[in-house]
Image (cartoon, rainbow, N blue to C red; front, top):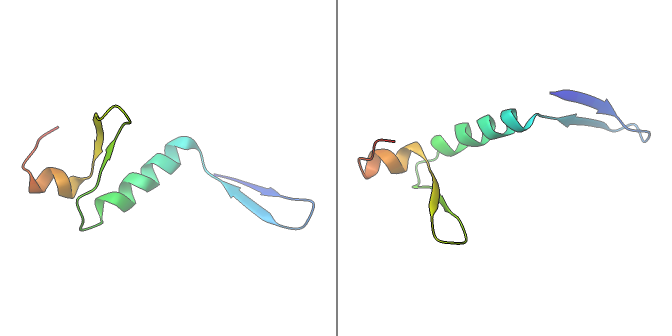
Length: 59
């Protein structure tokens, strides 16, 4: 995480791409809904833990 101060007195906090990905996965895995992502070609590239548990998949 880096903290920057703008010329207007605002504080801007930025995270690394790895931290953003970790935060996203943490949040998505705690949602009780089934969550998945699909590429434009139709290939599935993300499933949350609830989805995997519900359909009994092991990745």
